[in-house]
Length: 403
Ligand SMILES: NC(=O)c1ccc[n+]([C@@H]2O[C@H](COP(=O)([O-])OP(=O)(O)OC[C@H]3O[C@@H](n4cnc5c(N)ncnc54)[C@H](OP(=O)(O)O)[C@@H]3O)[C@@H](O)[C@H]2O)c1
Image (cartoon, rainbow, N blue to C red; front, side, top):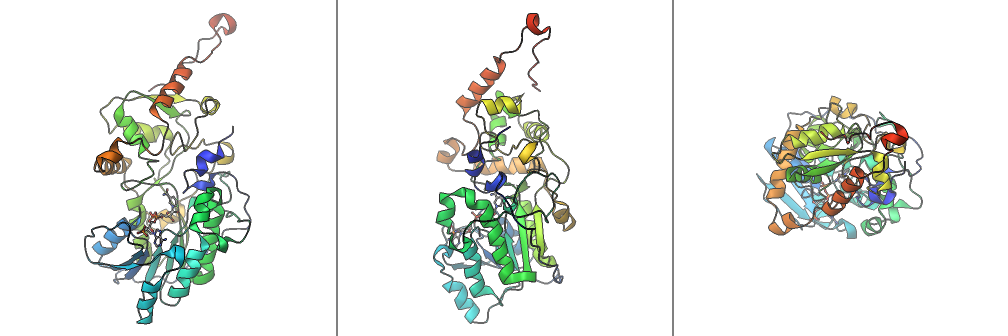
């Protein structure tokens, strides 16, 4: 079975879901000393206003920590407490506001770097912050791994390699060619370890979902199932699926900082096995629209050019080169107190967030998922598929597995 590489790559954050050749083993910094979890921390968050950052900020404030955020100030927000904001643009190595604080003798217990996907962002931040932060927690991605073939791989699996000098790459050059994402995330991890060594924590999330996710990758399913009617569903429902609610991720990262945990962590849930049927029937249970789910085999979808991940968001067929995509181990993170909201909670919060978006956004087509007219075409083709008649085969056409 072949998966259209572009369909995976165009969705960016999990861009390297298909085979970039990897080299070497993952570098994991050694475990550092445990900080006193009861101590109030000063936390510097690079980013802070994206998807995960606001949950980190709110949770850190609720636990009495002091928070400084550093970003360009393009997405101003209200906070449930006092937050210091420093401005600068990492694209042009503008860290003057941070450098001015450091020059005054300022120090943070931990720096959380949310958005770095190119190594020069780490190099340039380290030039200002090294020696002035007690730890550096960088958000990488499951895409940093070299391949997705082996179910159950843990944090020691090989990371992707990058052909060329990764320090020459910019956010603009990455956006122009998202096939670099995997290798550049791995190189960004390596840059973090180079500067912060045993003080580094590397977080490798799976698909980040929930309120505030502007990509609509997960949001597609709650919105689609709430609409009702005949719903195209991928495969036989048994393909595994994993994701992480941005609130669970953000809050856990603050707890990791409190505990002083270092090293690399895969970060996704839920903690029990989930498959596509569990996901989609679980979401349908929160609706009243009576959607009818039609499970259409992977091969038929491939022949119809219906792509995993792009047309059928979240879904990756659980065989072949992608067998490990949704089945990596999260045992290390769970042992380090990663906890998970229920699917119902994530779905409810996602829908509530979407309902609160401006009318223009709500009425626009979703940014992920198959278009309604194409979905209807594929379902019609599936229903009309050629099957051997009783005279030829002596068998009845298989029933569409609709539940
Ligand atoms: N989404 C997923 O499914 C997924 C999956 C795996 C891993 N990841 C990783 O998770 C992380 C997501 O972080 P996030 O949720 O906070 O969202 P994000 O969109 O990556 O980060 C946005 C934050 O960074 C700031 N920022 C962006 N460009 C900047 C610049 N040039 N200079 C200074 N600040 C800048 C933004 O504020 P301003 O715009 O105001 O500057 C905002 O605060 C990323 O590293 C991503 O690769 C995502």
